[in-house]
Length: 349
Ligand SMILES: [Zn+2]
Image 1 (cartoon, rainbow, N blue to C red):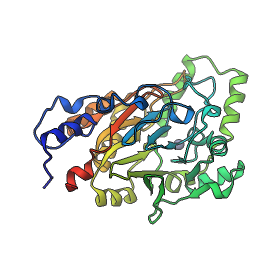
Image 2 (cartoon, rainbow, N blue to C red):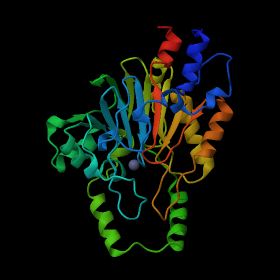
Image 3 (cartoon, rainbow, N blue to C red):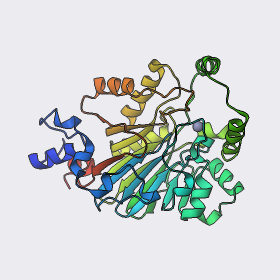
């Protein structure tokens, strides 16, 4: 039986982007999560805190997506980055900043070691002094590029590895990388190549250099992809998942323990066909039970396709009409008043 909040708190919860239980205001549930924190100077600009932007007030969580699986989470004076793939090269739309601009981070949580998730992890790690976290196969790449062991936390996601970064408790959970059908991906890629100009020699060299900073290892699939459950000091929960693969037993066990999360940041699968990407997104929604779903890894190179998010949103809402979905442009803030969260609501604390 869920704890029933006083009406004012229930409304605050909805404004904060948390689809509150109960019987009030279906319209309010879909409001922009930022409205609860509209006066917060840390929620006005499309500028990362890590590149010099304004930090949000103490209880506000500011989440900014910066392409692929990259996110910045700023909370109570602390900055956590998820993935670090910023200097993508001229084949990609610009993010509005470069890796060299990232000067402040307390931790970098790497979901997996593929180039498009870690290519700037070492340079940003060295500049900021951030703790860099990843699976063993990811850590090997970091060490090979000269990041010192004392700055790296290697995690398997198999339990007992929870650590803290300031006011955030972070639990690594072994996930699984996406496995898009090879024949579907090959057919789309072949068609796209036939319709678009070939990259120049300079662009190919640029991509080769970027690729050299990632890992290409079969271990990434089943033992190199880490989801992170981040719990703030007031109970607000965030699930981060940077590859659109199947939910693992490790993830299911954690979710059986905690029930659901306030926000899920989840990669859209790379399967091109909506029938496939929708199925995968539904699996994620059913597992993580988020109040708010924010997609990731849905942008693409200039001559590739972005992964459509609206079909996912629609399918998820058909199953869970209370779900709030949010997708913004690069660096635009999505802010939450974290004082209102599922744990407080459900547990009545
Ligand atoms: Zn990958």
